[in-house]
Length: 124
Image 1 (cartoon, rainbow, N blue to C red):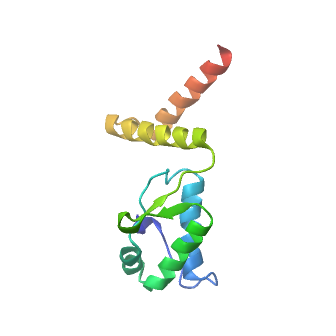
Image 2 (image 1 turned 30 degrees about the vertical axis):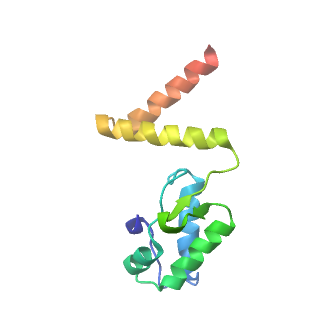
C-alpha cells in the first residue's frame, strides 16, 4: 500500500495533505473498497519517511470526512458510504477483478465483458 502513496518533497502541499488526498482519491474511485484496511500509522510513516504525527493527521482528516473509521487495535479501514447499493457493487467489482486476475483474463477483456453484460441488460 505505501508504495502507491508518493510524497513530493518539493511540493508546496504539506505531506499530511498529500497522504490524505491520495487515500481520498483511491477511496472515492473505488480502488480502496469498503472494509479495506489502511496501513498502520507508524508503518506508513516509516515507509514514507514521515513523522508519525503527519500520517496520524492525514488519517484524522480522512476520518473526519467519513471516509475511514478507526477500530482501535483492528486498525483503520475504509468506511461504508451512505449508499449501500454502491458499497455492495464496489465489493462485487473487487471480487470480479480478483477472479479475473486469478483466471489470467486481461483487464481490457474483463471490462469488455462487464460492458457487454450491462448493454445486454438494457436491451432485455
